[in-house]
Amino acid sequence: MIDHSGLSVTDPAKSRKFYELALAPLGYEVLMEVPTEHTGGIVVLGFGEPQKPDFWLHEGPPQTPRVHVAFRAASRVVVDEFYKAAIAAGGKDNGPPGLRPHYHQHYYGAFVLDPDGHNIEACCHDPE
Image (cartoon, rainbow, N blue to C red):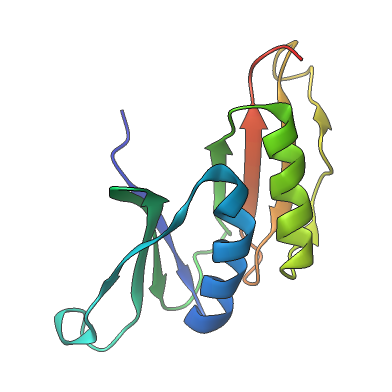
């Protein structure tokens, strides 16, 4: 089981705003901002559902190739809400909400590129 993951972002303020809005439908929020005196001066943000951050952003050159991160959604409606929020926050469409039967019969997902081009997804595995 994965405990946490993260990615590098070039503009922490812009990415923070994007992720705060995009991940809100999933129940995610900024839970921790590591003081810069402990990070060598770079911004490090921990997102998650209260009480534990499990998705981290840190200031730096984005990984190449860009990262794909998929967040599990409780329902297809939440996937739709994620997509709308992410697009409204400045994300770029990389696959609108819909079934992806080539993954499995009930796979419902939406894909958005974040400000650095990382492929961010919300998905639900349950039947409608």
